[in-house]
Length: 357
Image 1 (spheres, rainbow, N blue to C red):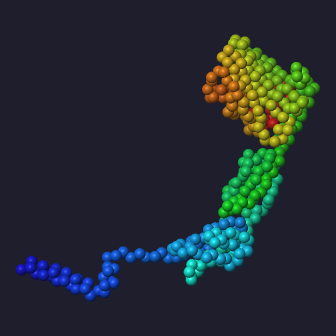
Image 2: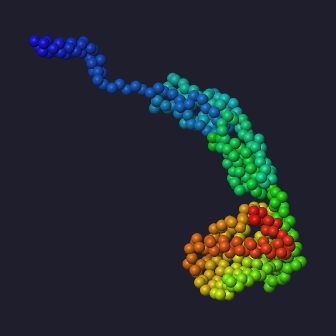
Image 3: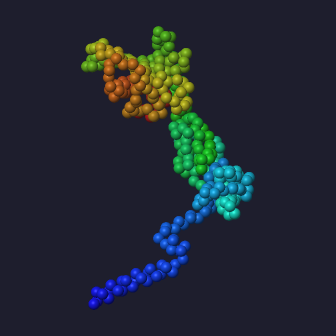
């Protein structure tokens, strides 16, 4: 009996649902069970924009496929193209309007006119200068065109490194503001120039004359254990106004001969340039010629250079050649240092190798 009662109750619910549906209008009934699409609101992608003079920003109307008509309340401050590209012209504010049908959508554009506190700066090595970009609330990105001459921090602090010129740039939104930084040689550079002259005078007065007619000074040594003879010399080439630091070693046991050379010009002592080193050896196992560069301001007796192979008949690996080249170069500098101390009573620092110990 209870079971029949439950069945009748369920049947009654179904009949009532069918009756309710029959009362709905045909339009409403047709929409039942159908997903309704809600259209996105039409709007601009930005209501306010900050730009610097010269910067561009593209505004877009979203939520519609209709084409917008663009206009500016003050074209002299901010102009807008038919595609919604806003170009900042001068300091001030303007309202950019996008008209779609009968409706208008606006964006307030504020134009800033930033300015660097200096367009050019002259510094001595190791000195600093604080650059500032004023007239903008935006954070600039700082960059140096030549970090070996001058570096710049994220906050615009410039540090002079070595003689030369570099351009420091503060960029905001693709717009760049430049400052030319000139770094003058410090007292170390002047000492190198003075030392260069002093060494030349000593060589011209005390030195011998080689087959090329150039004056030179040298020292020789011989090691009976290794059967190696060493001849270290410094030649002044008057025609080129340069010093050639030369090391020649010979092994009597296997008839091999090695020559190393570092060339310094008088002009290069006043600027942080690089110096050529040529190394070649000839012996029973073949011959090799290498070339590298030395920075006088940073080179020490512990510096390892990378050598460019000019020629090689020994089939040696690059790593082995680099080790060999650096070993002979260290020997050369040790001998040249000794020669300077014995002769003109100078050091390698006096002619520009300021980091050498």
